[in-house]
Amino acid sequence: MKKITSFILVLLAVIIFVSACGGETEPVRKMFVDGIPTVVKIGRDDCVACIEMNKILAEVDDEIGDTVNIVKISTEEEPEAIKEFGIGAIPTIIFYDTSKSEKYRFVGKVEKDEVIALVEECR
Image 1 (spheres, rainbow, N blue to C red):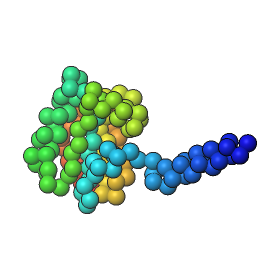
Image 2 (image 1 turned 90 degrees about the horizontal axis):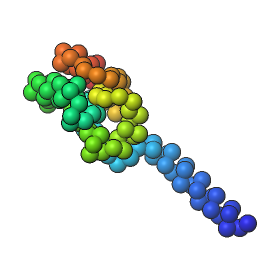
Image 3 (image 1 turned 180 degrees about the vertical axis):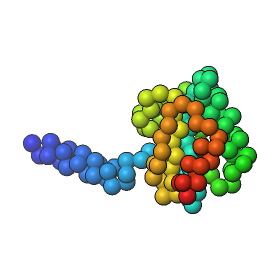
């Protein structure tokens, strides 16, 4: 009985610790850059809409790359991202503000002008 009680206490301590840390995994914490918005595109290399989004994000990077952090995550290379980000379809594009809070989430292609406008709103 004493062993079970000790185990439950340790398990509760771990749960409380993970909850207090926000439950974020290491890759999520490392994807942000302090002081600028982050755009995360999650997709595959062989998805037509994902390829189009890569081109659009490259144009955005050329235009305003010094004021936005663009992160591309491949579900082939990082399958855990599907669960981690709650992905139901690809490409999924997530916009985070400067405080690292999710502001917008889209599935499918987002045009360059809209991406730039949403980045501005995330400042």
